[in-house]
Each structure stands twice: as structure tokens, then as C-alpha cells.
Image (cartoon, rainbow, N blue to C red; front, side, top):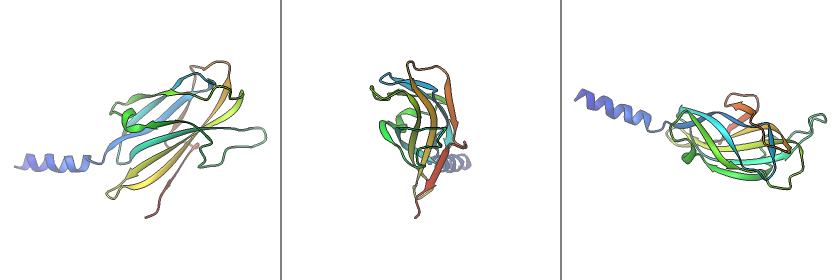
Length: 159
């Protein structure tokens, strides 16, 4: 009897715990028109991440011309995180591609993630930023961003 009560309570507590992106790495240099993957590490938290929208924006670091916080820029992909965060610690977000014909240079990749948390499924938005170069080849070297990193912003939609 006590064991079944314990199992029932544990199942209730774990019901809202799903995969959560802890860090995401994209190539430092990306060739426009070439498919690349983002590497991820994930864990379990009470926040349920659902959709990730990817965009890119040209910027000039020397002139301090950065993309606006919360903007996505030119959308190039959408990822269903329920399919990607399958419970494993290491994962991949496959089949990302900056459109062919994008001019070489310095860019920011932004990703906005829609998530839900709490008993009432409070929605939240998180924005991630990576500095990349659009160039002749896609590099193996990665720019990593952690969920607590300085290039991550979040907001919770008020009730």
C-alpha cells in the first residue's frame, strides 16, 4: 500500500518534467545553402520546451550594430523540440540551412524557444544568440551557448 502511494506521488511530480536544452552549439562558420546540425545537451526540468524558431541577421561588430533582443531576423528553420529532446543527454537538431545566396560576412543566429512551466502551463519565451560567419565552408568548430549564458534572454508571459 505504501509503495503504491509513493509511486503515485512520484509519477505526479514527474509528469511535468520533460527535456530542457542546457547548451546548444552551432558551427562557427557556415556555408550558405549547406545543411548543418546543431549539437545539444539536454536535461530534465519542469519547463517543457515545445518549438524553436531559427533566424539569422547580418551585423557589424565594429560598429556595434547588433540584432535587437527578442528578434528572430530572417527565419530559416523551425524545430519541434518534442521530437529532438527524446530523453537523452546528448542530441542533435538536424537539417538546418542558411538560404543559398546569403552574402558572406558576420551574422547572428537567433533562436526563440516557446516553453511552458508550472501547474497552469505558464508560457515563456527564450531567445538564444550565436555569432557566426557565413563563409566558404561549414566548420566543425562550434560556438556553444548555455541556458545561463550571457547571450540568452528570457521572459515569462504575465498571467
